[in-house]
Image (cartoon, rainbow, N blue to C red):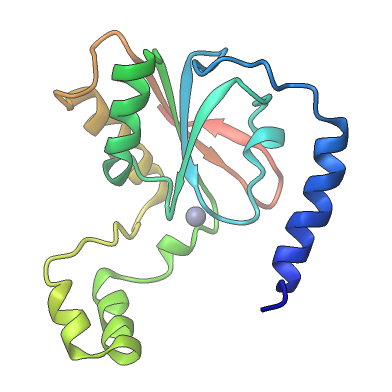
Length: 170
Ligand SMILES: [Zn+2]
């Protein structure tokens, strides 16, 4: 099968990137010793917007930039690599503000069938009602989490997709 346009883009842009690549000697531990949990939203360029150079940080992305579904990654980063700081960065206009858990389950049933929905009974899509509260809730959860060492510095932020600016929440 021929490469899709997205695959062709990958091959072409990667060749260009690799031709100038000179960072092949970086170690596994992030140089800034930190984790950034942020949303998968395509409008966010974490490296540019958050000042993260290659090798600096573990960037964990998911819908909403939620820490609970990122626990596996956080554990690996903190326990196996020893990262000591964590930034939670959610953002304005997040898609997770636009629907409720029930809406997502209804879409699953409509698109994938009754059984698929039944299999997801109790599933939490981690939708967001209030952005600042969601940031505070994530930070509190990390601070209370028995899996997160007490000496890890945790802070919560909101990135504005309209201005490109971040502001500290907690
Ligand atoms: Zn988002």
